[in-house]
Image (cartoon, rainbow, N blue to C red; front, side, top):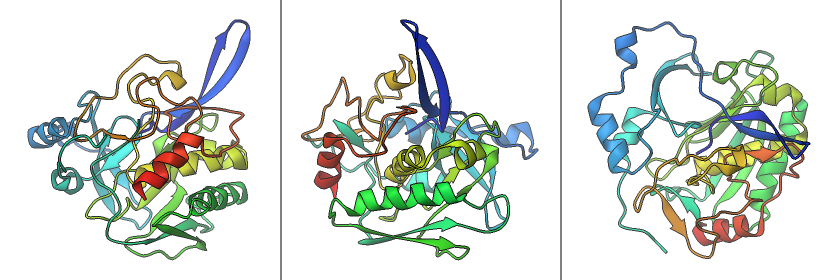
Length: 286
């Protein structure tokens, strides 16, 4: 799941290629250092689920509703609560490679997505709203068994996916960032956060890509290039699994799909559209 998207510059063969990747979540709330230690039972469960246990961070998040929540950042851009981690089930073995988690959306066929428009630090720019509309349209154009309804405003319900600006995830205005989480109890993860680097400097097509990616996590997708993160110019592994990392039949598998929306990073010239294998994955699951 994607390392909060950030703009990465790589120079190779005298050609400059700009990539968007995911940055570390940064939370400025002062808390006791001991309270940010990842508990052994959480670490054991994450390991049992075959997520990568390296680099897990326990952070305090200031939610848009004014509450403070303890969350765990896993594999760079996935945020889960302790209850979500502990309740996550091991639903059998691999399902014969886009990849998904064990947990999918099963409790509803209609997913409301709310783009927050409050006149404060949380509000989406007009460009971000356009990108969100494009992203939701791309899901609905696949005629899936789940349907997305997008709206813009300041009211949302408990199972809605709320999309808003949270600059604490990366306050650098020159770097784009986004973060989300996985489904639980059959419902999608309910928060997609982007920073002002994304909100104010990205194009609507870049935001279309970013938001479709983060919503993809909310409904159960993992990174397509989890095994290499090569789209970020890296050679690292987010963790192999036959339970928490489930291969989707008919997709690329190891080696990946360079055009997938669910890759860990993407080029600045993205058009924000699904790859052919993304469509295979979406239609297989939903």
